Amino acid sequence: MGQNYPLPPQMLDKWARETPDKVYLRQPVNRVYREFTWSQVRDQVLRMANALKKLGLKPGDKVAIMSKNCAEWFIADFAITAAGMISAPIYFTASSKTIRFIIEHSEAKAVFIGKLDDTKPTIEGIPESTIKIAMPYDTAPCDHSWDDLLKNNDPVDQSAQPELDDTFSLSYTSGSTGNPKAAVLTFRNVAYGAITPANELQVTQSDRLISYLPFIGRTLSHLTEL
Picture 1 (tube, rainbow, N blue to C red):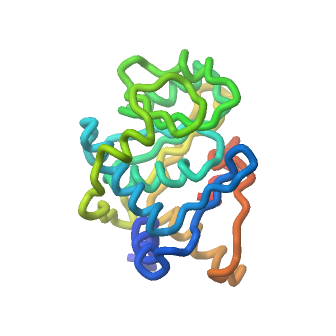
Picture 2 (cartoon, rainbow, N blue to C red):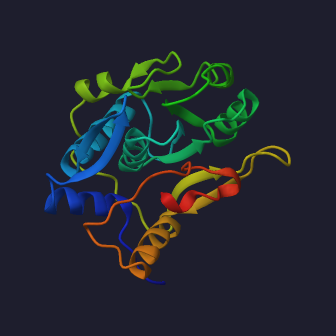
């Protein structure tokens, strides 16, 4: 059966319960930090998970994320998991052709759109039928706003409880040698990738991580930050 590892939703619940007021994420906006505690992140995750369900999505559905690194990227990813869905991140400089291919190939029903340098490819690449959710930044026109969905939805009672070998995410290559190809990542993959470096580096609760490399990098090279 292999070794068991704590999964992302379990760890979020753990730290929100044990250190609710401790800062988890810091997001610079206009050179000023916005801070998110563990309990605040969990609350937003559970509200956004409920919002996805209220928008008609079902467990097992795919949801894309297209944004530069930001606190909301983490929260959206957690929310997709909490709703029992599967993320399909898209590199933030992808062309409209690549964006459309990934959304159609993954069968993503919705996409979170966040910080982008150029929104034109995004607007052109996302099919009309795909639900578009705008993170709280200047972004492409969307069907729903992040803040409104958080305000208008109560938290779900409980996060989905995935198994280690359930699919966590579809991570696509850049498409430089043809159409992008999806690597299927399980919860076991990401759990092992998180716990092993932390143990080897002897990371403590007082340590900090600066998020620099894009979450979804060319040839999957930056996935370990997830």
